[in-house]
Structures are given as structure tokens and as C-alpha cells.
Image 1 (cartoon, rainbow, N blue to C red):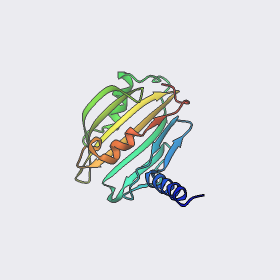
Image 2: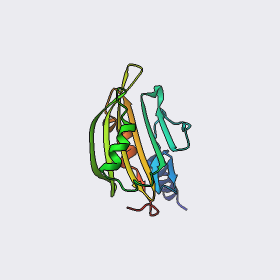
Image 3: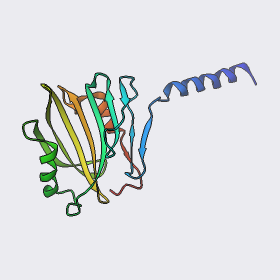
Length: 173
């Protein structure tokens, strides 16, 4: 082998390793979804507070948070519609502790979803919250994002997290 060819191969290997992200992928086969964990040391995967929260990511200093949760849909509410949302939002936006600002049915990665956003007050600190919720196969799925004092949709890491979210073939669209 000539020296130039060996150097070209070595250069290609180094270039490929530099372009490969160190980011991890979190996959839920039963939910049919995968998420890219932010490739930033400021983010860490935390222990979920209950079995319904499947993935919990926190930014250092608890200035931002993302979680993915799955709960069983009530037997009489197996469809994402206004009746479901009305009851859901009473619990998600508790009066006196939060203010709902927006809410709309939308599409996310080919799924019919409901998106809502607003503010939550925790010990005199205002957190901006956003939620994407959908119902599928008798379960309610939620991607919740929260950021201290700023819109989570404007956070570069959260935007990337949502952009890189993927539904696999097990997921019904």
C-alpha cells in the first residue's frame, strides 16, 4: 500500500468520527417513539418521579426540563377531541398555580395532537410550559417542556429535541 492511500483512509476515519454525534437515542418500543438526548453536558437524564414518566431530562440548575409520559386513557375518552382536552386541561393548568395561554389541535410528525402552552408559578418563579399530547391505542402520550422565564419552543436544545423526535412503525399514525 502506498503512503498516500493510507493517509487518505486515516483522514476519512478522522473526519467521520468528528462528524458523528455523541448524542444518545432513547427508544420506547411500546410507545413507538424515539428521542435524541441533547448532546450538551448541561443536560442530564434524571430519575422519573413516577412510573408514568418514561423519560425525564433536566438542564443544570433546573432552568429547563423535558419529559415524556404515558398514562392509560380513560375508558370513555379514547379519542383526542375537545371533550378530552377540556377535562385534561383542568388538571394540567390548575387554577391559581398556572395560566393557559394557547391551545390548538395540530399535527406533529404526522400525528393528530393537541398543543398547549402557558405559565406555571413555582415558589415565585415563572416557568413557561408547553405540551404536546396525543391518544393512541388506549394511551395518552405527552411531551412536556418547561423553561424558567422563557418560551421552551424558543430554546435551541428543546427545538432540536422536537425536530429529532421519531415515530417508528409500531406507532399508529
